[in-house]
Length: 248
View 1 (cartoon, rainbow, N blue to C red):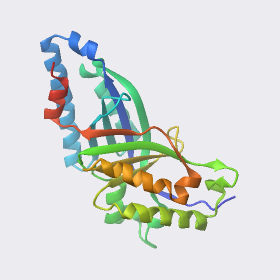
View 2 (view 1 turned 90 degrees about the vertical axis):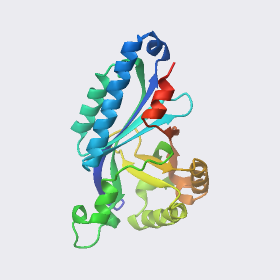
View 3 (view 1 turned 135 degrees about the horizontal axis):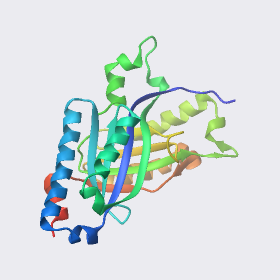
View 4 (view 1 turned 180 degrees about the horizontal axis):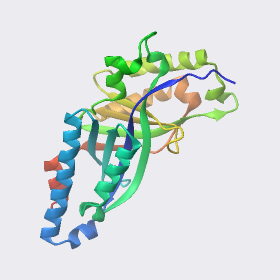
């Protein structure tokens, strides 16, 4: 059996993607549309209040392309809280004119090697800030799920811990070149969803998403062991931008 390396876990994560049923939206009366928007903005205010109290974090983005119209990314302490957020939104009038298109459940994850010897990682401010982050409000977001390959000589899980560590160290060097350009949140999903990790990138320049993913494809870690799901890319939403989107 290959060496098992423990991981550090923080807040649970829900990526919730929705499409707007524009026919249903247009069929509402002006009064109903106003009520639906008021409910949405009230929920957004609640999410902000939770973030201000450092009890979780939420990002709200439109999605470019046909996969969805918008995305909530919620971070909370427990799965129960994520479930409550889903239910609360689904009970709103605005949710009645949306269609769920995709969701992803995971938990913020760091490699166990990040822990300092003799120090409880959950008492380390630097580690805690990465395990329970306040999501950046960058102009753009990119999300994709991924696996590590488990085939023949390219079986990630049959490598020794030292081999995996060396691969990831080289892989991480590429990411460091994008410090200040991209903020990355890695969330583990083994046993929680269909893929093994969710990767969420935030940047003010969307072109950086293409550059970092392209460069990493040539890294041996990705070239030999990486399997990738669908990519979702989008733009930061706030109340004024949402009002513009929903205006008929």
